[in-house]
Image (cartoon, rainbow, N blue to C red; front, side):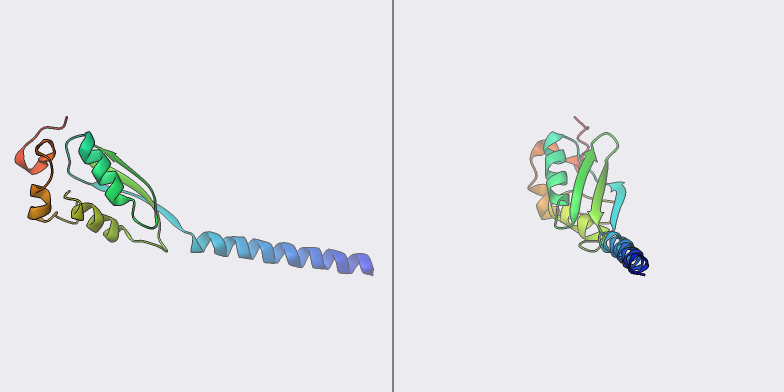
Length: 120
């Protein structure tokens, strides 16, 4: 009888642990997205990636030749629109947000992606 009770308790604990782990994974949902961000150089790359690393973003990797950034983020902490806005606030146009002209004009000359400067 004691053995049966011990097995029953072990099964209940295991079931509870599995449910808790599944809930934890859902609450920490991680998503990866890729979208367009305009820029031309290594300085742009640093600025774009740093701007994208707002609270909730785990990783940001911008490819200047593809003009795309891949971001990995926690959906409970941030949404992709916030990431677009943060990048635009740093002076770079995204597929959803346009940087303010004043901020864009304050970028170094080598970063003038709107003015036809080639990727370098």
